[in-house]
Image 1 (cartoon, rainbow, N blue to C red):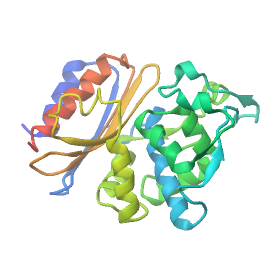
Image 2 (image 1 turned 90 degrees about the vertical axis):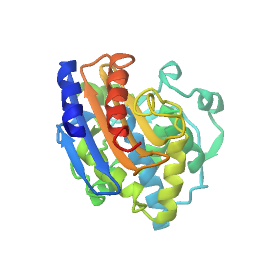
Image 3 (image 1 turned 60 degrees about the horizontal axis):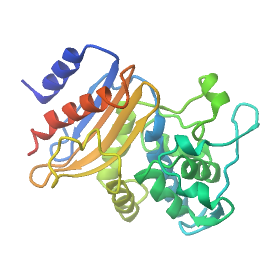
Image 4 (image 1 turned 90 degrees about the horizontal axis):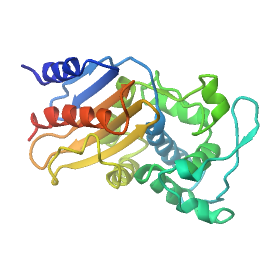
Length: 271
């Protein structure tokens, strides 16, 4: 039975929700998808796209990574421009809320955006970079089915279905390029991967892997959604990219366990 068939059997045995998987072996180039074109609300996985555009604009000379901006908690809805604030209690990282009015370097906002999934850092960066520019860069990288419309917690936009949209296929495309050090530049790619290595949310793809397997990943969850995307570096064996998106499955316990099972099946092919 092939690894893909094993994953399909695990999904079939689960028997609920919507699940999409993308896989790419960086050694052989073997790739496959399960529901790869299905569109999902990105949740916090979109923060990888923000990170890429930050380095992209730095490479273009539009900004410097160490440029500083003021930390504020007030943003404009993409629906009508009305103001909204983020709720600190709903954010995985709360330290920035204690620093309202202070200034911080863009790169120092990008790190907690990824490692702690800071919503406040994300919205500050999206406001600085521009959602349209982020989307355009994803399209330039080949992920033409991915759309970044806004930051997080824009309630009016959410009610109208104006969400950030991603696919397992699209994320596979951009992460394979990142793993090959082809996003912006080799140096920038290595810097972004290093930030992803600092991820503190490890309950999905890394959960059942051995401690000596390096995983550069970004999770995302929101109500009944749970996703994880990763570049996996086994201590022996070939590196690979894995993207898993779920919808309609309990996001704090059941979905992470399913993603961890899928990850473990594929890791066994590389150990």
